[in-house]
Amino acid sequence: MSLDKLKLSKPLVAAMTDAGFLTPKEIQAKTMSRILGGQDVIAVGPEGSGKTTTYVLATLMKLKYAFEEAPRALILVPDAEHVDHVLEQFKLLNRNSTFRILGIDSRGAVDAQMNEITDGCDIIVAVPDRARALYLKLALNTNKIQLFIVDNAELIVKKGLQLPVVELANSAYKSQHVVFTEVIHEKLNHMISPFMKDSAAMVEVDEIGEKQAEVYPQMLYQVPNFRTKLNLLTLLLNDTELFDKVVVFVNTRLTAQTVYKNFNHNKEGEISIYRSLFFDDKGYDDIEDFKDNPDARVLIVANENLGDLNIDGIPIILHLELPEQKETLIQRIVKHGEEEVVAITFSTDIELIEVKKIEQAIGQKLEVMELPEDLKVVDAAAKPKKKKAGEDDEESERGAAFHEKKASNLKNYNYSAGTKAKMTYKKKKGLS
Image 1 (cartoon, one colour):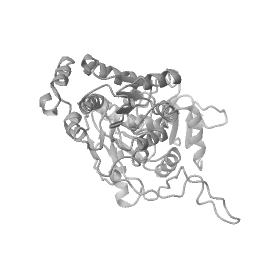
Image 2 (cartoon, one colour):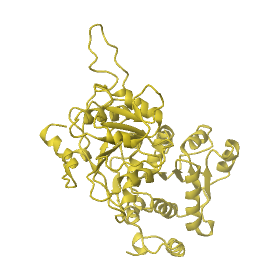
Image 3 (cartoon, one colour):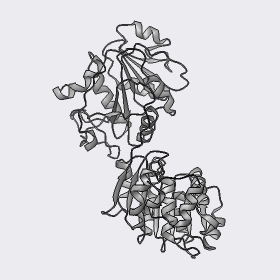
Image 4 (cartoon, helix red, strand yellow):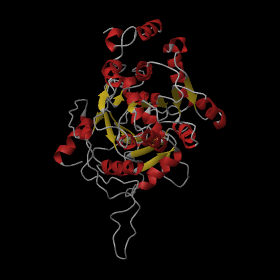
């Protein structure tokens, strides 16, 4: 497919060719005509799929002419680094500086930025909180904005910048709204629903690269928050026969302590911590001792200052939290010989970004598992209910709200990689 199919102007095609873009990316082919046609769009694609180039081209095409007093395009990105990246893309494709493009973030003084905006600009690339501050000071006029773009929306949600986005989007009520994100989840939907039109198009591309290495069978449980992770962990590990030897990875030693205390320790030494913070907690300083002890069933390990850890021979590897570096997780799931191992990952909506990066790195998707019917899902926004005298503790802090399963979770998968994979069949028998 040639660049001509994107219906770009000749100067933009020439700029793309000079920049080394000879064919359009899939996300460009699927979204460009919709954006140029004025439709609201939600575009979902992994890092490197061409999202930034897509909206830079669309913006330059939509505005057509330059030099208006008030900005006609507002692009919101999560941080100063992304501001710089987008400005570079505009510089690459905005030949002869046809449009006046202004970057706004916390590195500049508010008063100086107010003056820059009032001097006149066509396109603003900004972080949401600083853009909102300038809007409230009446420096940022949103009345003439034709194109309102949110890029890396999943990171904006992760940084807790939803409210400035919603306020700015609602102020630019005449504009077309376009959202680019790596993942789509409930919290992101909550942010964009107040301003996205019902007719908005959802476009999704999934560019999983070539398979890089053989990995153990992968299972993914998607849950709303950490407390629900603990509930799910407890529920799964209650099956002592299936989960007979498990390493549970978390990020910090304090979190390891929290997880340890969450269990009801009915059997002495059954659950322990690797290099515990406190001497009175059951733990191991050498993982080989854990492997050799038949009564030791679950070892909680913190990634913090961990170094090398030989987990060969452990049949179930469970990541309760995703490590900061995806390579940390990947090296644990690469297949060695004919060992029968199952790798399980728990993820909240916010962590789905890291899941996508892992999938791209290993060249395959993690299989999404259905949540057990009897899982108690914690509503993080709900206030704990005060107990009345004589009332039992059934609905405790660990959560009493039941969660309606997402459509993506209502799936059954078959695994043939070993006896531990039989766990996927247990839900069919009502045992999970």
